Image 1: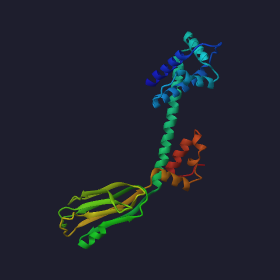
Image 2: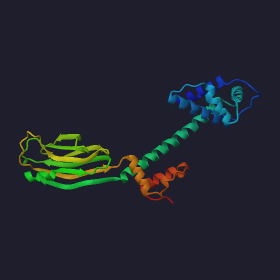
Image 3: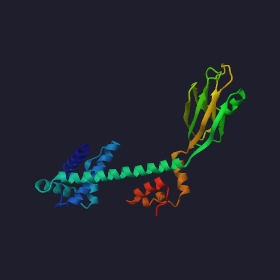
Image 4: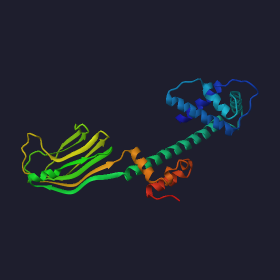
Length: 289
């Protein structure tokens, strides 16, 4: 309804802005729909950019594009108002339907691009460190609960593990801690959390790594300096450090790997049947015929 009112206002501005000149022409309905369509898009763009401009500067180039003058448009609109069989609202409905179809098509293209992004990032998701089971029941075992990952690449990192601190553990408060180390050896993005006792629980943390970071440090059984360290009894399961490449880099990598696949052919992006082919390719990972 709101858009319909905007279109009516557009038509009103057109009518008010036009001035008579030479002998005018009666514009066919199909061409008038095109003119209103382009005028509405021009208005929408100006509202979005918060730009104010003289109406004639906006509309006269549109009229000329279709081979008409402002007088032709004014004459045609006045003729429509006189005809019982032809109504301005009918033209506005046609324009509204056209704009709705275009909006749906653009939304579909965005969905496809998002699908390609997601496929690319899944393709270049890597588990860079994993351990299924670590048990620490002696002080010497705690060294196995410290992990350092060198030569980090930019991307999103997720660290996860399951843990159980049982009743044989003699430490009152135990923690898990991780942080990133920069090239200058400074520590950033430090995160510390207390480990719950006597129940199975999980640890998860996401970090964003850029080119200034060189190491990731993970200590799954950390104690404060003033804490007295006692005999541990902790079990770590399903430790994983997963890296996801940044979206742009992942898409670029997918492009380099699959130069022959249709989803990266700019010419085919313009085809109407491209969207369905791309979705099928993204979901099934097969090359279209």
